[in-house]
Structure formats: structure tokens, C-alpha cells
Image (cartoon, rainbow, N blue to C red; front, side, top):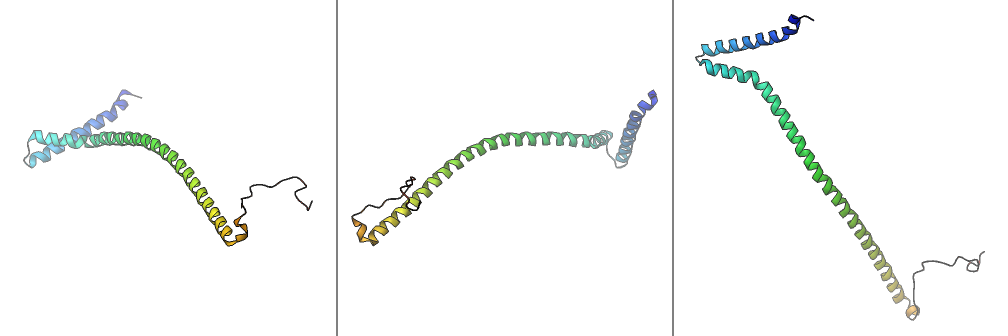
Length: 139
């Protein structure tokens, strides 16, 4: 590759910038503006896309950083809420067991009131049976 072909993109870019400034100055002078204000406006117009790109990069990185910091807090809060949920589920299970026990006791009380024969007896909840062969007459 020759030196001229390497320099060609730079020469074209400089030529386009020069033409842009020249056109801005000539249109600005025709409208009665000063040469300095026209050059400033032309420079600002040329650099606007670069400024916008830099602003976009900084804004995006700031948002990403803020979201990352917020996610750390959310992770900790999520962990604490999981612990709280497990505790509440345990308490709910205890309350449900108490409710069921209460229902069983009310039924037992009603059963005892309905059958006066058992007024002197004791009722109990069967929790197991003997497993030897003498307990079951069928075997």
C-alpha cells in the first residue's frame, strides 16, 4: 500500500470539513452574522454527534452502575423476604394444626354430650394399634 493511499481518507475528511466550514461561513456572512459566531456554530454543529455519543456512553454507564447497586440491595432484601416467608409458613402450619385440633376437641365434646353413657368414661384418640397376630382375630 502506498503512502498516498494511506493518506487518502485523511485528506478526504479534511477536505469535507474545510468545505463544510466554508459553506457555513459563506451562508452566515450572507445573513449578516459575525465570522466568530459563524465559526462557533459550525464547530458546534460538527462536534454535536461526538458530544451526543459521549453523553450517551456516560448516561448508559451511570444507569447500568445504578441498576447494579440496586440489584445488590434487591438480592439482600429478597433473601430476607425468603426467610420471613419461611417463618410465616411455619407459623401458618402451626395455626392450621391448632385449628384442626380445636375442631377434633369440639367434636369430642359434642359426642360426649350426645351420649350420656360416656359421661363417666374417657374418650381418647387412637394413634396406633398392636401389630402382633393375637390382636387380629381374622389371621
